[in-house]
Length: 611
DNA sequence: TTAGGGTTAG
Image (cartoon, rainbow, N blue to C red; front, side, top):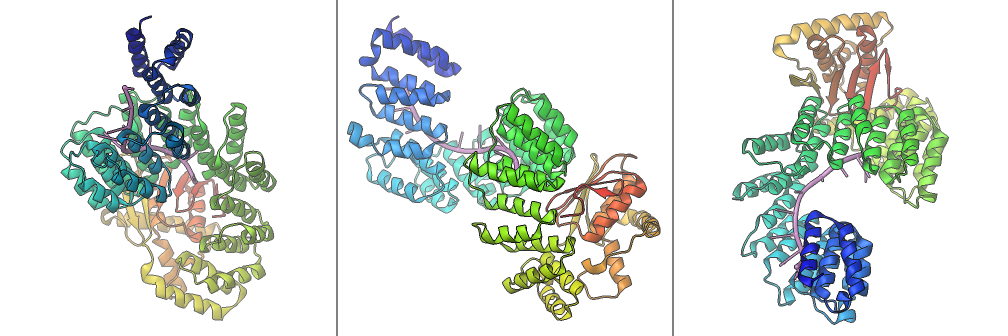
């Protein structure tokens, strides 16, 4: 075959992402000896292998090919970056001069800077930036736009902005990198202002802003912008923005919104995208519709470690530990290798079913068989497992010997376990330690106060109370959000809807009377304020989750699950009350609080009264 | 022949 034709066919392979066809041409090249005199052929072939994820083929070709030039170097660096191996990019680059006596050009610089962007340490990036400025390519706008992206990814939007200002011809790509940098650093207003200035707003730019907002917890803003993007008629030509917006629905636990996103995904025909279906599994799990999550998961033709981990974590978070563990067995049978996140879900799952030995074994397996280094999260999960199951001394021992500095939350979890398992002596010892650290969280203070009160250490009770008064004003107001599909509402403690105030009050009163008949005694130790018993009970009566439940009972379809999201942790008394209400009304109530999901059904909770 | 921006699980 003549050279021109071969070249054309190779280019076609790149367009069609057909690496196997490329391999055939490669074989032909070797046989006819074209390789020995045409490095440009090798470069195109290497590009094809790199783009199709055939990294080993690309590397082999790179090592064997004669007459490597700057194009070869730029291509191999790009392939390594695409495979998310930036350290290898840097290491290969370091031999460029010694092997081929070449100095980087603007193409090589752009790839090298990209590799630096993928590495979290920015020292190397700064060095490359200096090299670039000293080179004869220091005016190249594309390489500069890589620098903007690098500083943005390293969380240094101001530095990115300085480079951005020197770019003569500002492409949408460099605008997008900058907007994304500001959005991801939590500089919402700056990001939005920049976005407004951008003339050609393409899908990538919208995606950068929206996903940046989602990543920094500005979910409502993200939805608003997404709606605006739809109104502007921007074509959703790829699924990136949809996975971000699905994540926003998940974080808000807004099932209604999540279902709308799902519909859109179906309409646009993206339901076979692995990334998106993974996002949907997570979204339904976080919106506490586990059966929908499982259905999507079961129907997935291809499942990767993220798909399996999403469903395992979902099951675990909802207290369905045994199912999570069975799914793990299925995952191993399917030949999918677990990663660090999978193990977090697994140990978490064990703590929900009280499988101490299994959890401990999985923790060991992760280290010994998979060679992973446990993170603070892993240790926290293992601690939780010990604590919940009453292995308090093991928990304390682990806390002391783990290679991380335990924070207030970790100590507080152990103290909570002491209370749960009625080990007053150890509880007081832990409480003293927390007190000596100077607690910052009001919830920890309540725990301390209750521990000291339980042990009769009144001096310390008043000490903690004083601390609480000092931090009293800083406390975030509690609210509960209820999503009834057609409408959603937010309730703050003590405030109910004006037009429904009487109805809600009457229903709560009615339920209160029935609960007391069944043995309910209000636990007023959760009330921080200094007032008499009756007043304290009234305080509890108006907690936001109760108002939301009452509203749900009045307005939802009979028998439907009531779903509530709370911004703080559910208080102990409300937890008891919700159990009673689930039994009296024969309704399933799902509450997602700051730390976990609670499924209240027939008078029980999936968290087994430990949270 | 080669380079730059936006997605999922804790």
